[in-house]
Amino acid sequence: MHKYENISAPVIKRLPRYYRFLGELLDNGVTRISSRELSDRMGLTASQIRQDLNCFGGFGQQGYGYTVEGLYHEIGHILGLDHSYPAILIGAGNLGKAVAVHMSFEKRGFRLIGIFDNDPEKTGFEIRGITVFSMDQIEQFLSNHQVDVAILCVPKTAAPEIVDHLYELGIRNYWNFSHYDLAVHYQDIIVENVHLNDSLMVLCYKITDANEPPEQNGKRQLSD
Image (cartoon, helix red, strand yellow):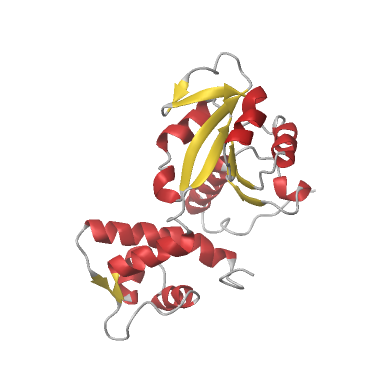
């Protein structure tokens, strides 16, 4: 049984945003904040913030608001950031290298312990102080190290074979940049998909929508 039952996906997706804003408040020396003040900063309603936080218990006091440091640490705990889940990264190309170098894994509940690639020209080099191993060595690596998470920075065409192998080796948690829909093929995994192209297209839509004439905005005829 999960500790928090029936929490909606939108609420969960807002938690990292709360965590980020509270961290900024701490950096600025703010010690206490009301839901109204927090709503002004985040662009949410005060009611929405109270509803979200009430899903996990009562953190504020009426007439006092929230203790910024306390709420920051509570949300970090809810997110599991006090863990250190060992992770491996598959794919040491441009995307994989950027993820390895620029993500603050240790502050986000993870610990990157291995990087793998099929390209002989990439193996043997170090990224973030971690040697890139060949995919042929992954089975031996997993026999010597506990690994909870695989980060997939590989092309969609390469993903099925790689995931089949990782799944057989017991990995059930994935941070997936590959555009391969793991959840369709494996029902018992936990996966967070990252679609950078989708995000870029949403931005394109918002810009296009904002710049269209009013008579066309929101009313487009679709041809057969």
